[in-house]
Amino acid sequence: MKKTILLKICIGLLYGQILQAQSLSEALNTLENDSLLKQGFLAFCLMDLQTGKVLAEKNMLKKMNVASCHKLWTTATALEVLGKDFRFQTQLAYSGKIENKALKGNLYILGGGDITLGSADFKNNLSKEQIWERWYKILQSKNIQKIEGRIVGVGTYFEQNAIPEGWIKEDLGNYYGSAAYGLNINDNEYKLLLQPASKIGEKAEILGTEPALSFLKFKGQILTAPKGTGDNAYIDGYPFHYECFVSGTIPQQENNFFIKGAMPNPPYTTAFLFNDFLQKKGIYIAQEPHFTFEDIREKLITLDTIYSPTLAEIIREINLYSVNLYAEGLFKQLGKYYGKESQAGEKILEFWQKKGVEIKGLNFNDGSGLSRLNTSTAHSICQLLSKIAQNDTFLKSLPVAGVSGTLTGFAKNTFLQGNLQAKTGSMRGIIALAGYFRNKKGEKRCFAIIANQYEGKYAVMRSKFEKILLKAAE
Image (cartoon, rainbow, N blue to C red; front, side, top):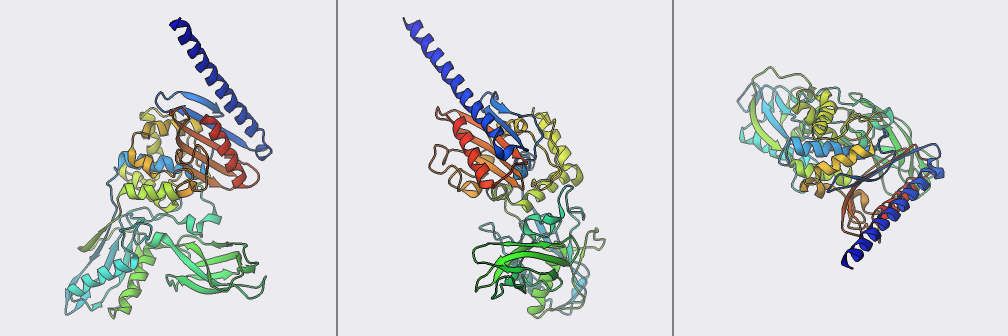
């Protein structure tokens, strides 16, 4: 009798699993045939986290662009290779000698690849103003009232060609297209201050930048649109070019409006801003600020070293808020760790291949996912997630559905709220979501769902992803 009851229970459980699989499979087929994906592509993989078994899939081996979900590879590798306590550093140093209240040489800001220098994103991080004040006090302690040379921003730590292969020109001048340099400041972005016109259709007035960057010039025009139309203005710019072209619209309003742009030359900007600060403090500087990407051959004396937040803190910002700049900095640091920045993608692939991840179909050109040449597969992403699942720092960095980061508005008032943790990714025609959840039986799963070349609104496609994942959690 007991054997018969046990057999019935097992058959019932197996039947339930079959029905669940069919239900999810049907939902995936429906989505794949949806009008939004008529000319597009769908990929999906659901994996048991304990066994690594694929429970459901749809085109899981197809090469797909996953946008910012690509950051999963960068952050997971950085934690494994560099360690959660890794910190970047930036140094203030000088050449020559100090005598008669004068520095008879140059003052150097030596970048160490710190993409967080002066950023307000971290609770205990020094702002750029606090850094300048700290360094000013150090000069005061040395009784320096005059610099007979110049202030030089040194970007040698990373290669001068900061733009990864596959970035498009439309991204380069805007803040989210800020590249990582050997010396960075203020998230490598500035605000372009604008005053909307009193009449719709008329040109908005450019008031300047914040911080004040007098070397930047702007051409083109931004028009005034009706109230509530939002930010539809863009900045076209290129590395080491100080003339930018603006276009688009901003909404009509009484107060000033701003859009954010990418600094075209962060090493120079850092030197420029510190130079301006010191002059306002009354320190005479004989020569104009300068930058270099060459090794300094002069003997340097270090005055100060500033350390970045820990890698754990940086990765939390990357995954929670999808910060491109920070991911690019980690990607380049990984390349440097292995000997050459340009080999970062190749070395990341080698690292995970040795851990059993299938790398066929993967192509890595940057760390953020902004490159249109990056490809991943849903299956390889799930394999990555299964390998890194025991890293508590990584898990805590992911947004939580309906609670935090880029998933604050996702799956609210559903079983997945507070349960699903995932990285999001989106670009024009691309949407991706990959992470973890527990199903209604308490079993932990990892998943990746991706759509390329879809039509329609992002919010509509994301809601369809939500329905698929709710099915997967049954």
